[in-house]
Length: 261
Image 1 (tube, rainbow, N blue to C red):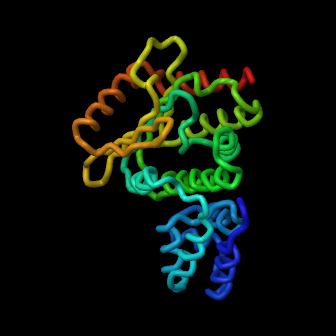
Image 2: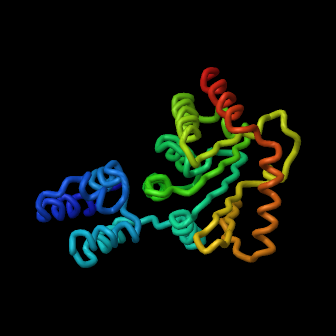
């Protein structure tokens, strides 16, 4: 990622506020210290709500917010923008992928390899990597993280790309799957055809007890809020989970693939 003014400003604001440490800032914002460190090394740019919290903490008006906005030269497309906000509020997330590892479970190296394989420029890809990592921190770094369930076709765990990157990614998948409130299920090659082969989709349960969906295609993603269409995604989810391996068997299969790399 190209350098931006956020690191310099955050270090300055910490210094003039009794020399606050990164750990103290993280504690006040209820995020990880590693996230603050990434802001200060230009690996991530704060998302709007995080930038606002930083300004509130330091009493700096809209300084961090404005600087972070300027640093985001490749904002996510308009059709995607509501989804990270939904992820941050969700009490439960369900995500199916048939070709790649779900974004919330991707390592930085794997995300970069995926994003640089398409039509994005290098700078755009780096901005999207940053957004993906910050989404992960916003979901899993919460004091009360959502219950997350992922179904991943075994085809997504294959040997495309750099083997070292893939091996690290599969190890990460196992580690994430060992967390409480997080469940990773693999759909094995032995499974019959199932609706999830048509493409990825997500479902998020919100605090107001409503559920919204999200689907991707080659052109754009679409937020699904109409009850009948959400219900259709719910039925697809039931069909997908019916052919997925249980948590323990999924873990064993992923470790077998790791050992074969």
